[in-house]
Image (cartoon, rainbow, N blue to C red):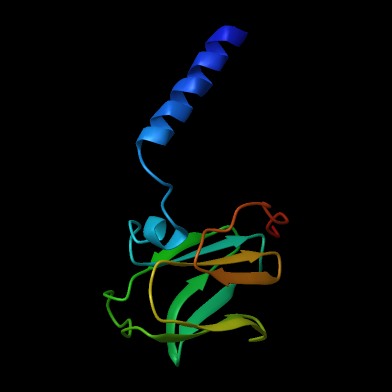
Length: 127
């Protein structure tokens, strides 16, 4: 088995070396759909706004995508505000001028960025 594993690793390295230099983060994300991906990992229900337009309402444990070509969605750039639905506490703000972008809510912490957010899973959703 160790010999087989070594051959698989060597083959993967050879294929990687033959495919050219690794793509930059911007090159890699340009191949993805032009959407704002939103994911709540154990957070409170939130509203995502572009100016005064509500782009999305996201519940705990929910994931969705928003495209600028959707109905009633304004064109880019978006002056984004993410707030809790219950008391409208602002969790994060930012300007989105190009897509894809990712918004992840982990508990009550919101992360907005140009690359997907890995781990943690966040706290369990309240029942």
